[in-house]
Image 1: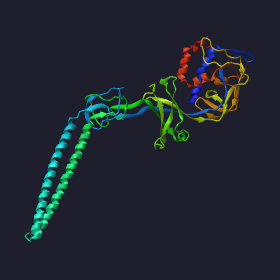
Image 2 (image 1 turned 30 degrees about the horizontal axis):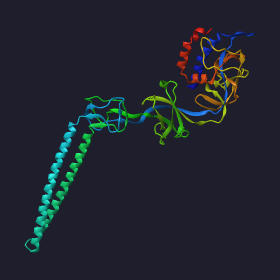
Image 3 (image 1 turned 60 degrees about the horizontal axis):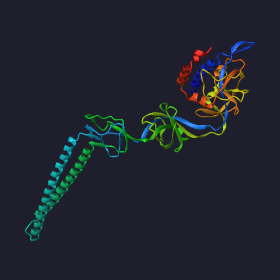
Image 4 (image 1 turned 90 degrees about the vertical axis):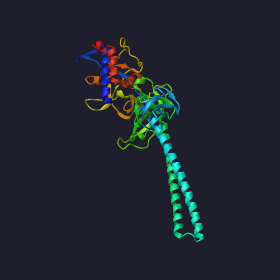
Length: 429
């Protein structure tokens, strides 16, 4: 994809350059030929930042989804989207008539069980009194042993009946607690303090434990969730800086740090999840939005650095290299802005040399290479135009790193739109 992108970048830039060059030609013994126009920047010496670009999803801090725990219709909604709420504040009231009736039924059952306990206690007292009389008669030899055993058995039976009645009463009390808990669930409260959003509730709507009603979260402290592969986990650590941006944010860059990394890889994707804590006082990050995340995890050793667009694979030889303007003047001032009505000047025809290079490190926008020196002018746009050139000469427009990096970051359709707005096609000769 990157190679195809650079081909398109070169093609679009050629349209601009060819329009600005107005068909410059060179007369020699081979006839009239159009000398290609290219852009170049100076290679630099330094370290290359190491980063990993990922896609992420924004979530609010402590974001939770609110579900009912019972089945009932909604009778009242107490909050709207965007309302701030405190922990324990009412969100929704459900119809509670059925659940109140269940509580009353449970209380009635308890009263029955408590009456049965009193009956069992009375029977036990009667059996114990009867046992005492039988023992007194037995001591006077006025009662048989069989009657004494019968009285003892009646006491044991009465004790068991009382124990059963008390257990049933305890069970009835537990049922009341359960029914009252169900009744309390007819009022749905916020489990946290935050902002309400994602409303999916209307009065009269029948809901159950699978119906999401609201989402509540702290939008001033957000987090971004990203997936890490096994290889990424070995180089990304908690505390490293993360740069977050999105198309909807324009040129705004937000920074946070990796706060958590799950140590468990999922069996299906062999990836894990990391969280990036983000301050969101400005409210730019909306829960649920997709963002691009660059996690910065270090720097390479110092080397000669060039923009990625300078690295070119020669279509004839397959060699990877860079076109270098060996004799291009160091006094040339790089430019940062282009006015299509008054384009910056191109140099006189200058010879280019295609040098084979070795890429020792590659970042998001630039690469560290061996084969050229710091300060060399390297072609970043228009390399494909040199393929048909016999004398390897081109007119060079000096450019700045900022301009080339900006072009690399632009989407192809954006570049084409810029060219169309500048009427390049109308000026090309």
